[in-house]
Each structure stands twice: as C-alpha cells, then as structure tokens.
Amino acid sequence: MAKRWTAPAPGPIDQWSFDEVEVAPPGSGEVTIRVRAAGVNPADAKHVASARPGAEFPVPIGYELSGEVSAVGPDAVGGSGHLQVGDEVVAFRVQGAYATEITVPARDVFAKPATLSHAEAANLLLAGTTAAEMIQVTRAAEGETVLLHAASGAVGVSLLQQARELGVRVIGTVGADAADSAERVRRYGGIPVAYGDGLRERVAEAADGAPIAAAWDAVGTDEAIDVSLALVSDRDRIVTIVDPERAKADGFLWIAGARPESARFRDIARARVLELAASGVLEVPVARTYPLAEAIDAVRFVMDGHPGGKVALLP
Picture 1 (spheres, rainbow, N blue to C red):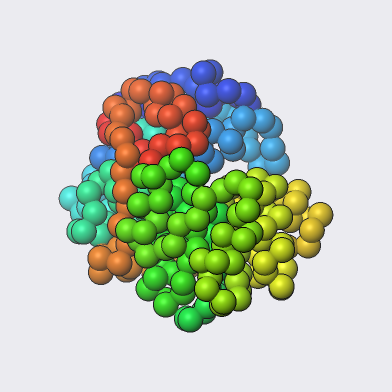
Picture 2: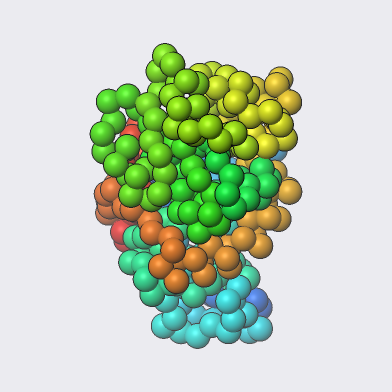
C-alpha cells in the first residue's frame, strides 16, 4: 500500500485527505516510481479550489516529483531513454505526485540530473518549462534587455538563469524592503529594482539607455503590468502567467500549463531544461522541506507568497 494526498471535491486545502491506496502495477508504456521528493507549487491548490472543465474529483495532488523506478511495464521507454528498476528519475506533468509511490506514463519520466538532490530535482520542471515558454513566446534574444516581475520567485529565478545562458540582460523587480530577494536576483545575473512609486523611472535608469525589448510578468499586479505596457512598445512581447484578464483587456500574451499550446511546448521543453540542469546552468534554490504527511502546511507556506525558494515534500 502507498500513501497519497487527494482533493475529494473542489474547495480549500483543509479538506484534502491523506489515504492509503493501492498502486496499480505498470501496464504497457508505464513505470512505477518510489517517490523521494514531490515539488510543491501554487498550482497544486489553485487547480482544485473550484470546479473546472476536465477536472474529475477526487483529484490526486501534485504535478512533479523525483524518485527511483521500482517497476517497469512492457514497452516502457522514458523521455530520456530506456528505464530500469533503480534508476533515479524525475516525472513532470503527472497527477498525484504527493505520494509515496505512483505509476505514471513512461513518456513523462526522465533521468534525474546528478547535479541536483531529489528535493531540487522535484522542483525543476514546472518552473523551468514555464520560464522557457515565457522566453520563447516573447522572442527574447541575445543582447536584448528584458523586464522581469517577481524576479526572486521560483519562475523568476529560472528565467534569470535561462536568460543569462542566452545572453539576455534582465532587470528584475523585487520588494522594496527585500534585501534577500535583491541579492538572489544579483546572484543569478539580474539587475534588481524595487517596486513602488517611480518604478518606471528606476527601470529606465537600470536599462542605461537600452530599450526594454520585452516583459515577463510573474506577479500580476497593476503596477507591474502598467509599467510593462509603458516601457515595451510591442505588446506581443509582454507575457503574464498570472493575470489573463489584463492580458485580454490590454492585448498582450497570457500562457498557462492547462492551455493546449502551452502544454505542447512544455512537454517538448522538459528535455532542454533537464540538460541545462545537468550541465550546471540551472540551480533550484530550496527554501524548506516538509514530511509528506505535512503537505497542507507546506502548501500554506508556498501560498503565502514569500517562501524564498522552492519547497519539497519528503515521503
């Protein structure tokens, strides 16, 4: 028997249940993974907070994990090649990662980068593929200067590192009293600027005469979006991951993992993000780990909005 967290119906995280479940043996094209760490993301709670098309309750919680292959079904070939029992792997775009063991499609399973711990690897792909898509849809290119909102968050940190690899210069917004956040932005190659009155002028000063070619919004405040609209001339080069209503109203881009075009890109992007991590280009700062049984506390910590790094559940 395994243990797994499930949302029995739409609603708050307090109603989630932690139950013993039978893990189905892997069928054709499937593998079973013994979970060593599960990544904790705001989407884990948001996607079960209310009824939505395609969600059939009860819903197992969690989209990404790191662990070891414990069983391999017939014709099971992973995203990075053949799999065998004992392999250390990551899985992303699965359902039910908040568990001790899980059977998943082998196509969603990849070799774990040796550079990362299980807690780090379990938090690599959701943020990493989101960041990769933000770069792709805004066509950010070497030598350009880009504005990034919420630069010290999980997606922001991955954006900073992937942009640095491409030769893109990033100006990243942080809280006015967040010295740790500003230092994190500098560590990963960005130029931190503080939110608040005069943000547009501070961004322009940091750009030192260079045009702001694009903007990546991971915070969704009116301040962030208004400044992006004021500084970026082409609205097709502004993207948000948090405010679809403003995107629709003001004519700029919105992406989300549940949208078919985003899902297709992120499936393809997984391999590249893993390569960047394996080569040492991508780090995953982990702020805290929790026992699997304390998943609700871990999600509350993440939803508070200022974890200072990623959070992992350890079975």
